[in-house]
Amino acid sequence: MTGVIGAPLAVERWAVPGAVRLGMGRRTRLPAGDGFLVAGVAGGLDPSVRPGDVVVAPDPSAPMLAGALRRLGLTVHVGPIHTSDHLVTGAQRATLAATGALAVEMETERLRSRAGDRPFAAVRVITDTEGAGLWSPGTLRRGVRALKTLRHAAPALRQWAEAIGPREVVLAAPRSFCAGVERAVEVVERALQTRGAPVYVRRQIVHNAHVVRRLSDLGAVFVEEVEDVPAGSTVVLAAHGVAPAVRAAAQERELDVIDATCPLVAKVHTEVKRYAGRGETVFLIGHGDHEEVVGTVGEAPARVVVVEDVAAAAWVTAPDPGRVAYAMQTTLAVDEAEEIAGVLRSRFPALHAPRREDICYATTNRQQAVRVIAAETDLVLVVGSANSSNSLRLVEVASRLGVAAHLIEDVGDIDLGWLASARKVGITAGASAPPHLVDDVVAGLAGLGPVSVRESSVGAENIQFTLPTGLKEMS
Ligand code: SF4
Image 1 (cartoon, protein in one colour):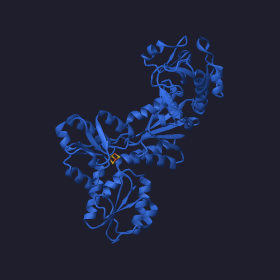
Image 2: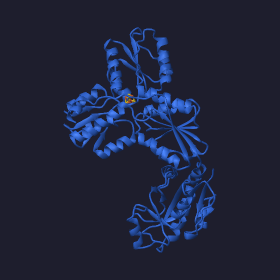
Image 3: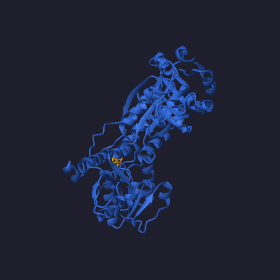
Image 4: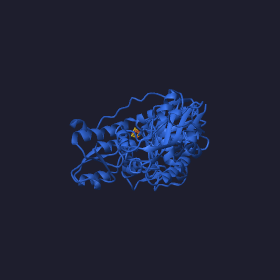
């Protein structure tokens, strides 16, 4: 299938190598093709839009196209583009701006209606605005600048055209929110309902930028340390858990503490305390800079040794090799963590193991599920934030199976270049990524051609955690 880039005017076609001439206004025509991107210049309507800015019409693939253009360093707006019969100047701009349109030109709507259900996109660079009108000094300079911007944008437009085609999408199941994350998010929501805003949250409640942004909008205030919380206020401790020193500091400030630590993280804290209480050295397999590990180490700093990899497992020592135990960060790659534990076991025959696996059910299930989809797809997209440990592990697990795998914060992070040869796309999401972000990715891919979606499940998850007692009582 072929995507076609078209430009209404000859100068616009010059700016976008490979574009076909579409003609202007009523005379515009749609060429043969399976998907169409119209590129050109436009007048700005909304005051937020400046000469040289790029406006992308809100078609289904717009978030990916806008992301690609932003990564080229361009200022991009996504919003309605009005198609007019004539040049729009003066007071007419304000009238059209009031409809919500960001820009005005003379072809997009005509072409979109002719494209029918075939993929369509429109990209316009602003030449003139209310403050810098068509007949004002500098029009020529602004026009040349807009055409240069269009040329700069051309590689992203070509990627869009090359990505056009049908796809099969395979959704991993389980994916997205785990019980610990759902509980932590609900804790903040209920705290806001019962205590009222602001409710302070130490660090990111879960490692996801979208979740943090939504809760911030509801009135949560995210701080680094409990010392940043006004005395007497409510503070929520994040799902990753904290060291006892943090609780003590919160108590000292007489804070109303609500603990959103995931019960499965709390279980690892309890284990470490038990081992350390028996005088054992605890090898904590995990990433030393991850908040969960920092909190767990804080249970017994003098007795816990963080073991990050197999190499470290091969050289770590303990004062008494006969009194040793190990524990794990809950969100590690299962196979890697087991390899590290194996090295420790071979070096310390007396090593105590956790009674039950420390790597949590959600991490294990998502890794199993991503393995299945990686085996049958050309590309795996993992929705999650860059600081989400379990999301990063999903990328690693898929990559180790030889498939191209990428972490994306949301649909806007998809590099259109990844899609040119990817006809079967696997999608999963880390335990902290909201489910709607996966829906957005599917919708974005559907904007590039017909998409068939199926789910590949390794089993259902029915785990739920109860809310902290004090919070339940107040709800
Ligand atoms: Fe709890 Fe596992 Fe979810 Fe972390 S990933 S919050 S440990 S259930």
